[in-house]
Image 1 (cartoon, helix red, strand yellow):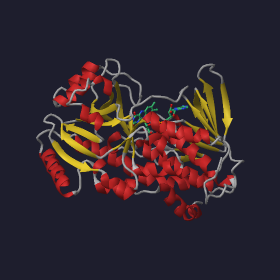
Image 2 (cartoon, rainbow, N blue to C red):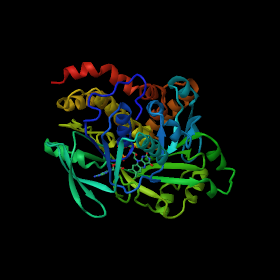
Image 3 (cartoon, rainbow, N blue to C red):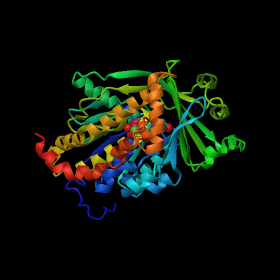
Length: 447
Ligand SMILES: Cc1cc2nc3c(=O)[nH]c(=O)nc-3n(C[C@H](O)[C@H](O)[C@H](O)COP(=O)(O)OP(=O)(O)OC[C@H]3O[C@@H](n4cnc5c(N)ncnc54)[C@H](O)[C@@H]3O)c2cc1C
């Protein structure tokens, strides 16, 4: 593994035994970050037996691009994605544009465009980088079934043979996603409640392929353009944008959960008939797109939020990504915040000179990341509420007035995912630079 110029090899490069649970965005990002810093003993344990085409659209915003480029893997993901030229919010039934934002300023101000990609493209970029390092070992088809945080070890079960083994780590990074077992076990040990709030909302993920549209002139612009559309209505919205080299139009919804669908599973199938019924009053262009989706390819799951958890660290173990700050999709930051966590873990662990300081270094990581990630989670949740206001209500009329003013003057936008002040706080955040600058001071404060 070549260490990038200007980086010193960590003092514990060959002696620190690092284990990572989950090969999602956060876990692979942490593995790559640590490999790039010079660590040579990194093992990732993943439940799935292959890392493939699961999921749908995901966003690569400049705060993530900055990190991926440093690792030399940005192109792998962005070459298969779309650099958005802008985003519109539209009235769901009239199709009237409520606000339209030109995204060219994003690249000018933050150095990278706003990319949309298939989740598999981002995962490929991170996994390729980690594999090419030659120091990251992936163990697939392995489920972690128990943790012993006092001893920094975990019990892993082979999904086929059902054989179990305890694995000893020096550092344990738990990026096991929104339904994290590690989070539950950590919180239980402290007598804390893993408080999940039901939003009463569910989501469909819909992928419309170019070959399905029969070159319908109403729909071709969605594929040939590089634009994001959010159709909003009472208690519901659909956000849609092209991915996969413009061959797929990705549509993702938020709507009342009528079926009490399973929480947070990315593969649970939904009913096409119910989906069409849910959006029956949406405009004809949207209806056309929804009708094209083949039966059996509608995925639906419940959207949940968690109260911010007080502590991400237990001994020499840390949570990262959705395991410690699961976020609603309304701000396009779930993956970006997980990748930022991985990058910051790489930075803080690279500064270790003695294994006895692992817990302190991990607490520095929490100090650096938690306020920002918790703010992103809260902003995503409140954004969803603002988009779903009751039709004809005074609040909705006021919001729509603000939408118009935002288009005209570039002022505050009620959709915080496209609001310049919110974007600036997210996209200008250089989490690695910040970690490097603050590490010594924060480390000195840890008792
Ligand atoms: C299959 C899948 C598809 C997704 N599709 C989309 C999408 O289309 N759009 C979108 O915006 N977001 C999607 N997400 C969520 C998104 O990737 C995350 O919100 C975000 O990237 C945060 O990353 P993370 O690493 O914290 O969690 P995730 O990316 O969810 O990764 C968690 C990983 O941990 C593994 N894992 C969980 N428990 C165990 C265990 N006990 N032992 C071993 N491994 C375990 C999981 O299999 C998973 O690979 C998807 C997540 C998954 C798992």
